[in-house]
Length: 542
Image (cartoon, rainbow, N blue to C red; front, side, top):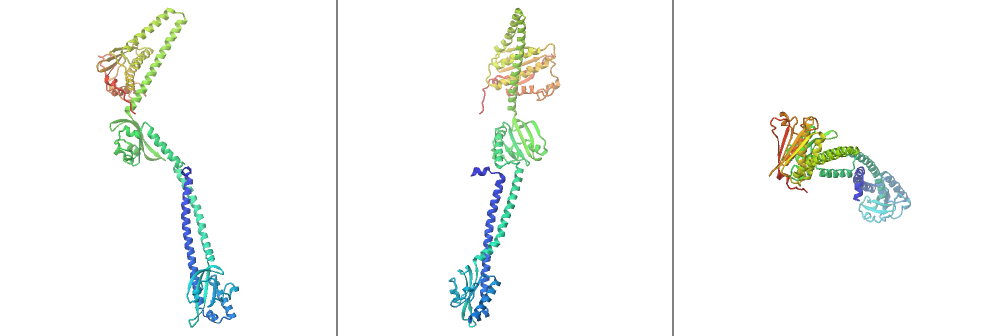
C-alpha cells in the first residue's frame, strides 16, 4: 500500500487528498444540515397539528353538532373538517365521540367506525397530548385534544395528524439542492486541485516528489564523495550546506547540525562568500589562508530564475594540489625522458642500418664502440652514486634530451644517494631536478656553445643540487619574481616550473638560492635538502 501511494503522481495525490477531505467534510456537514431540517419539519408539523386540534376543539359549531349527532350534522362535521384539513395542509382530522366512533375522516368509508391507533384513551379522559402511532394512513404525528360542551362536560375528542411519510418527502425535497451543491462544489474542488498541482509542478520543474527525494539523495551522495570542500550560504549569509571534506580541510571540529543555519563569518572567518553574494561577482582560483590552512578556492554567486539566492564556495587544500601537480609533473618528466630516449634510439638505429646496408663494417664497429663507451661513461657514474633506479633513470634520460638539443650536459656526483622509499619524495626530487635542468636547456638553446653542469653532493646531513648554465642569466628585476606562480619571461601559459620547484623544496624542508658566478654569464641554482626528509617513512592515511 505504501509503495503504491509513493508511486502516485503529485497531481493524483493532491486531487485525491483534496477530494477526500472535501467530501468527508461536506458529507458530514450535509448530514448535520439534513438532520436539522428534518427536525425542523418535524417540529413544525407537530406544532401545526396541535394548533389545528386546539382550534377545532373550541369551535362552537363543531361542539353543537357533536352534541346532536344526526346524519346531517355528521355530514356537516365531515365537510367542515375537510375544509380545515385542506387549508391547514394536515393529512387527516378525525372527530370521535366518547365511545371512539368517528364523526369525520379523510376516507368517508371509515366514518362511523372506531378510531384506530390505540393511543386515544388519554384523550377520552380529558388530556391533550401528542403521540406517534400507526393509524389507517400509516405512521403519523397525532395531536389529541378533548372537546367539552358549555357545561365543561367532555363530549368527544379531535385527532389531527401528519403522516411521517409526508414529512420525510418534504425534507427530501429540501435536501436535494444541498446534495446538488455538494457535487458542484466537488467539481470545483477537483478543478482547483488540478490547477494547484500543475502550478506546484511548474515550480518544481515538473518533478514528482519521489524524483525530488531521489535528487536530494543523489546530491548528498555527490557532495559527500567529491574531494573538494563545498560550503553554501543563503541571502542572509547563513550556512545551508557544508560537506565532510570542507570540515576536514578547514579543521572544523563542530558537528553539521551546529553549523547549518549559523552565519558563515561565525563559523569560517574571512571566506568572502557573503561579499561575493552581495556583489554577484564570481572569484576563481584564489589562494586564501583560513584557520592556518592555505586553500585554492572558487566563489560563485547562486542565481535561481535570475534572482540572487546565495553563494557557493568550492576549494582544495593547496598542499594536496601541489602534491598532485608534482605527481603530474613527474609523470610528464618520465614521458619526456622516454620520448627523448626513444627518439635518440631511433636515430642510432637509422645510422646503424645505413652502415650495415652499405657494408661499412669497420665504421659500424667504431660507431657501436663509441655508443657503448658513451653510454657506459654517462650511466656509470650516475648508477654508482644514485642508488634509486627512478631518479638514476631520469637523470640518464636527460643525456638523451641534451644530445637531442645539442647541449653539453655534465654530471659530477660526490657521495652516494641511497634508494628512497617514499614516492612523494621521489616525485619532489624529479620536479626539482627536471625543472632546473629544463630551465637550463631553455636558457642555452640559442647559443653556439651550450653547456650545463650539474653537481650533486651527498654529505652527512644534506643533499645539495647545484645546476649551472652559460645562458644570458636572470636580470636583477626578475630575481624577486621568478618563484611566483604564473610569472615568466617566456610568454603566456608559463611560469609554473620554478613555483613547483619552490613548493617541492618547502615540502622537503629545504631551501634554494642563486649562486654567485663571479661576473660570469649564466645562471646557477643551489638547492639544499636535509637527508632526514628524503628518507622519511611513508605515512598512509586511511
